[in-house]
Image (cartoon, rainbow, N blue to C red; front, top):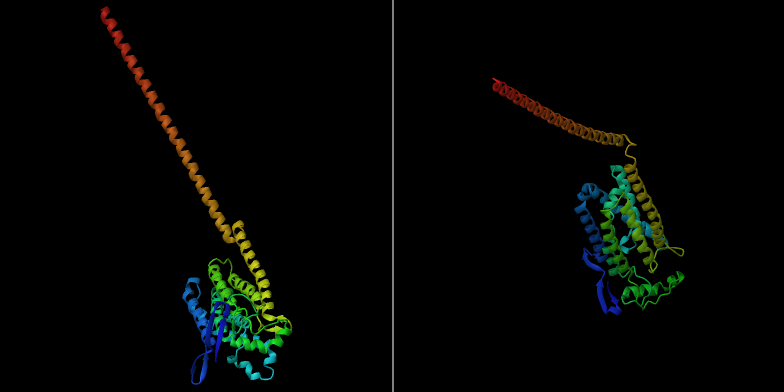
Length: 362
């Protein structure tokens, strides 16, 4: 099942086999290997940083064990729900995921539901756990999109850009679906290059991952990192989905694009509400220190400390005055002593003079 993938204007050509190897006559596809690698790397990186964010590694692993099957089921049901015509005649194909057909939004919703139930049972903070783990999701998505490259899927409409791509499977599928695409308002030429939308999303997801890793250290309230992921991923997916030719449709509406726009609006509002509540809460604690019993105690302690400081200052001033008074009394006493001593000297001198006069008379 080999196939040629080309980037004509870049002069690049690859011959890629979708099957990596066989085990007991069962083909193991590169797509599955790439997805498994992305998932494993995300889990290992998260476990490495769990304790740094006060997350119990055991709780995280348990959550992963619950969300993994839930995300696969959700991704499959989402895809089947909006591709029902492909399964109506053969219901057994619904459980045959080896034929493809997993939608990322269904996987995300399934994983969120599983983690919510798990955290409620374990009495763990739902938003705090998700804020820690969600940055690793776009990293895994960025890697996983290269499985689409190997399968020659998740591509866009025709383009004249230098990085336009084509391939054997792409040409065949576009030729097969030309009429269906026309009904969607998409005119396509199977022989011309198309947008490598898998690459666009891979690069976008990598950027989202880096932003979330940076923002996780700076969040103000639980839930902000999760909301930021929904906003950023939704923005990227909305414009990329518009370029794709394999979108899941409900009439003429691209379901993933509509859901992306809803996510951007809804989670932007939630982010604003969360941040505003945090700001008001912080301002309330600062401006109304004495409204709670704890705040009243702190206020009394501050007043007592201020009173004690005033008493010490007053005592110090009084001491200085007393010391000055005592010094003045000593000085005054000294001066009085000096005067008395001078008077005594004068009296002695007068007495001596009188004696001398009497002697002369004699």
